[in-house]
Length: 211
Image (cartoon, rainbow, N blue to C red):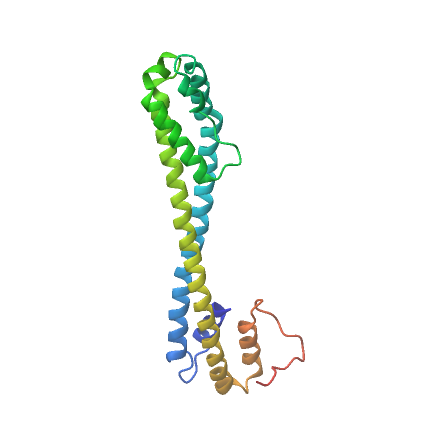
């Protein structure tokens, strides 16, 4: 709506209408709103991207890496009894933080008993892959938090700017009515520009309502 108001003022300048502080302020607010809207969209996209990546990493952890480590740990427990309870895969409904904490604990134990586990069939690459995956998993958590902060902050600022835009349009409405109130066709175009739902074509015989 504000964009249409801006275009109306640009297209129908007369005796300085649209050239003063009213339009200048509206231009400033719209520029700010466009920046905030871009930040808002960026936050949403980043949140979705990090969430999708985290789901894939979680699947890899629970269905491959940790499962493999648990299997090797069970075999190694025959030689080192204490390993029997060290490698339990977190439940599927574990929170992100719980999964991260439990998996890091398993990685720490596996690193301490690497020789025994390798001897019982663990690939030496497993610990590196597990450490890398956990690092990426943790990064996605922080990325989601940062993206949400950006989105929420931009949304709040955008709401404030929208309120200022609405206030400025009310001021401009008074100015346009003052300057063009006797021009029915022009006032019809102005009413269409100010229509929040979008431009409309007035029916035949319709007259602009008085303020």
